[in-house]
Image 1 (spheres, rainbow, N blue to C red):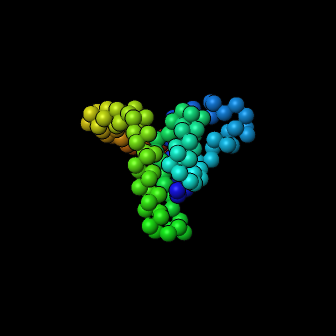
Image 2: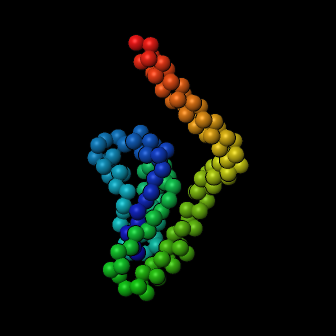
Length: 138
């Protein structure tokens, strides 16, 4: 297997901090890169243990240093895709639902963002105008 980097979103960082009972435990769970060598079962054990410790994660990133034989690396990827990833597909349902909701509400969010930008620019120029008038009145 190749090294696995576990990316965690902000919510999971918050959950991890809340669950860390000691500084030592916090340091143990803060390591975002975990080495899982061996069989698909070994990789599953590492990832499921990590999942239980922090309450989930958003993405699995596989890091390769190109030190291993290319054919062995491809075989590792194939085993990972066939036996490990399917165990995490359903656990990602909340993320898929969230993305669907964001896409469905994209126009409303975009309109609010644009309105906020316009207001921020108008406030800035109004403050600049006030400063100019204040200085002129001195």
